[in-house]
Length: 444
Image (cartoon, rainbow, N blue to C red):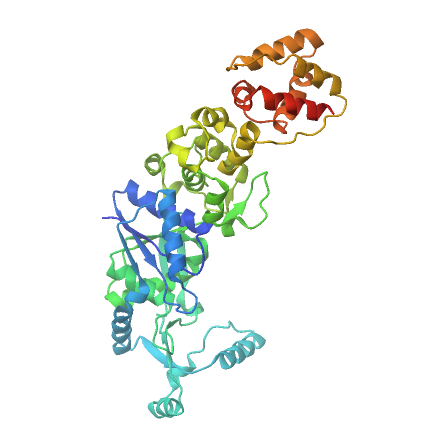
């Protein structure tokens, strides 16, 4: 059975880049009828916070992503210690005492000599007496994994054939001096223990793949059968330019701005794929999701496409779906009038002010006589959906205006905006008294 995992580090909120990885894992598992694990990589005690773990889980649930199991690495320290002991007994990890300054000096010397700045394995030459002396002086060792002298090859499900020459890589630290595992080591131990079959993650983690495969084999005694898929980095390619890098755009902010979860999920799932422009359910996205069809280079995130999807998603919501998120007193007639014109849900408040509040429209230069005439020709109430057409037809016959010269001044006066929901539904909600008052203000 396919088993995937999403493994965020709870040191901050979930960003769009992380949400894309989570979604890719979920959709791949759904398509393969597999399982998804949510693992919190929180072994960094100083930076990882339970509140961030809760926030990430909340954002995933909001997106519609469900998981079959969840756990925290901080609850599994005994498992990592046993794995380290296994490697220690097999002489695959070795103690090190160099500090940051000493390591930096070594790297500088290697660079000056034109050599690759990889770790020189100097601690392998340490004798038992030297180690005992260092520990007697209060030093505690951290432990490095002894990489195999070979080149590993594998097939990436997104980017194709790849390889890693392990002799060109420094032996990685797997256990810190305080006894805690590094994230790289804990991740491999967890993937083995939980039976992960596919690792779907961002391209910036790809450099660790060769090391992880070597660790996997050292811990299990056999070649790993796990498959990797690395998603290309996101780039802002839309005509609407974002104020910050797309990868650091948080799901929390998008949710607060009024992005619908289906719109965001559709946008992220279809990056790098040719697909339609309508929002889709996660079940529909899973049916079409194929790691092998994803773009192999930088993936474009188009904010204008996201807004277009969001407009469509909001336009399909019934009043019962959204009532609890609308301003107090908002009616079904109000929602049906505006729902097809919203890019973001937080725009609702502005339109509620238009129909029920006391907005002040701009004074429209050169339109005073026309707006006073429009006020005089306002039909008496009660009003229904036909009042806008009847009123504008009368104005057209009286003034000779048609098209934009007729309609734009009226829209600006009545709503304060030059575009928005259809006024045949909006005008009855505004009412005659508000409409007349706004026409007078705009004509002043």
